[in-house]
Length: 319
Image 1 (tube, rainbow, N blue to C red):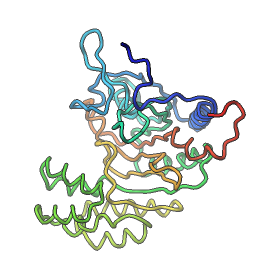
Image 2: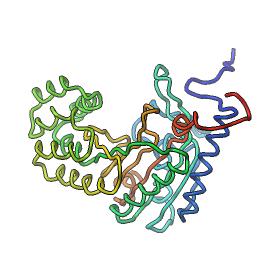
Image 3: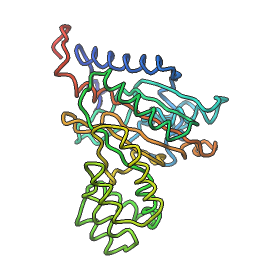
Image 4: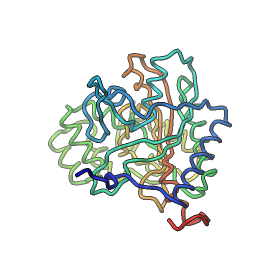
């Protein structure tokens, strides 16, 4: 018998939720276009190679009539990179977008597999200026969406990458898990088994998050690597431009293509970031286009709704 129920991880949106999420997406998308950022709409379905080099069971897959593997997009950034790399788009260029993305989460986590995003990608610009402008637009977008209180958290892909370069693939996977869990005992055991010049930093990594000035001062005492110190300096310079800035040096890159500054936005109401992004320069190599400096962020519209829903007034229905 055919299953006629709602698929796992999918949700119907009705009344207040549907209305509000549409309004948030529309407000942010219109604001970004009014800021003279080109609108782009990419296909919902692409060849799997746009998003993955190896089969990723977190993606939604299907086959076309020729037997080629397709993916329902989990991420708009990589679609935009494909456009830039395979067409005659002139650089530098700024793009804005909004729409659905799909990611297949563990059913036990209760997360939505279908989410609405709005975001920007600045490609081919000076990265320092692009980061600052992108974050200014992020803050303006959050205010427009009705989010008044939040925390900006900074990190840098260049902090952990020099450390990962010291180990093989299996060791990196193990180390990443220990870092993600902020496991003090796990990291202590790891450095005992696989000693390196980064032992002191790794053992203290679970503590290296919080107020930017304090954590940066502590972290600088633990490393001598010039690449990591340069990443610290980049974060420190940027942190002076914004209020309520924290850092987390154990932040793992959400996507493998991040190469520089990374940022996330949190609040006390929503248990996950409702805006995230950063600098990525190597994504275009996937499409044989060489390294191109790029900065972008994505706003999770569904998470924004959870953040502000109690303050929303809606008379059209009870859900």
